[in-house]
Length: 120
Image (cartoon, rainbow, N blue to C red; front, top):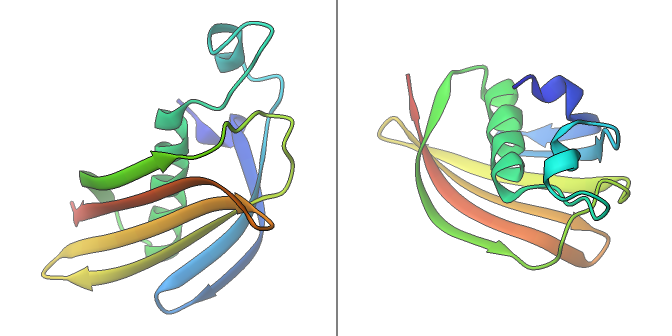
């Protein structure tokens, strides 16, 4: 699936081991017809794909999700929520990127993610 049709991101801010972006969803994307009709929500797996996509763009490497060590969906994300902030911090240890991420808007956290990515 082409993620560029599912979401866009702007306002990239980054340091050596962190990246923060503002994300918005395409409210008309066909995924919402199945997830769920008349009550669309952003699927958890798509949130993980977005985290992976942004990490890959930041590190300029092909990284593969190896292990999810923790994930918490604390609040439902609907495509109508605009300007969510996705914050990723990561550290490279023995060819494994250890990643922590929050998806939030202001003080409200929607998703917390921790995982490991290996380089291809």
